[in-house]
Length: 335
Length: 248
Image (cartoon, rainbow over all chains, first blue to last red):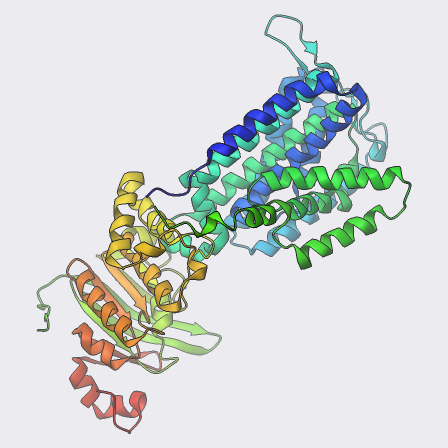
């Protein structure tokens, strides 16, 4: 008997998702594709949080910060003429670095899980203040004017190309496929990791860290590794976001943005990564709908949604759905 | 009957003047303890005598206020728990501490994996499932198991590490009489390859283990002898068993 394995259905899901990502731009109007792209970027951010929170139990309110730092890094470097793929990579590295520094302090300092949540939230709000107070035109990095609450504008879009040839801007359809493809790759790698020994050890850390240590595993570097990777993916998502809208402003560091990432994962369900995707899509679609019908109570509805899930559907949508659909096969005898 | 370890057998564990203070309370007060290789030692004493604190220091979960711990000739005070585990000390805490969402099989597999790699972990996990009679429950998550079964899972995890020394804090607590007997037999089987220190309250169980007994009282070692000598001792009866007739 072998430990838990990835099912074949999952491979089928990845292939179907890949087909959808390639095919959708042929079916939908450009406007919808552009809208869907930002949804996918948020999905990526949600998945990055689920990697830390769902897999290893590391709740962070700082993913908005890793996202924002990635976005600013992309913006500043791209405006200064760095090739956009390199700027995107730098965005990922910035997110990973910030997560790594916070994670190092938290995990090697052996502070509690709740303190990690508080610490990451505090850093996010500090970034909001700092970036918000750069309105004076003298705050500039090279040719990138930071612009205070207005943020950085005219950020170049992601352009891909082969070395020595002029790179080509992707356009809405190409950018959608790039973001979708990246999301699928992250999901697939994340799922493979979940079932690999490293992922199983992360699961034991989530369940009972003390037992993991007493079994001879150093939990500190494992938590740090997954947290930094998670911050790196959030950073890439931030870079993609800056490329998508050609701007970035301190709003990404706001309290509502920080909380929203947590709500996405909470609604979709932790630990499976797919839940994060579903949660981000459902909540974003709902937010957009509420905005479209012109209610002023979007935040109130989201708050109620969160309370409802915490009280009534604690596992979130996807795990609850799976549990209900698997009730019969669950009574199989072990092989 | 009893395997009396020769005094020439090398020491596996030694503590010198081991003390632990919690805000002025002496949980441990200068404990000098020696364990020889191959011993199966029982630790008894009333609640608050310092037994669990002693275990937590030996496994690196607590740092002593004073004193040294030598394991296999090496000083281990100050090492983090995972390093001590790798040196060969495995512990089952008093309150079963497991990975509730994970299956029984995964517990054994993951406990072994650090030491054996993938293939070896599968073999060890399979063997433990059989040895502990948990085969039927292999894929069940441990959160759904009975208390006795949870105890065995944790003992099995410690066994999966194949440590030189097993520290078992109340391994038979909450078990039925039959389970207690099986556990005693299991520990004696483990003892053919490893040394053990067992904290227990059940005198019947300690008798089944057939090893020397160390009595802790108020953070100190009160005496160390066979179970019969310990139970016959007036001072032990006074502090631990009360003056009434003992179970033994």
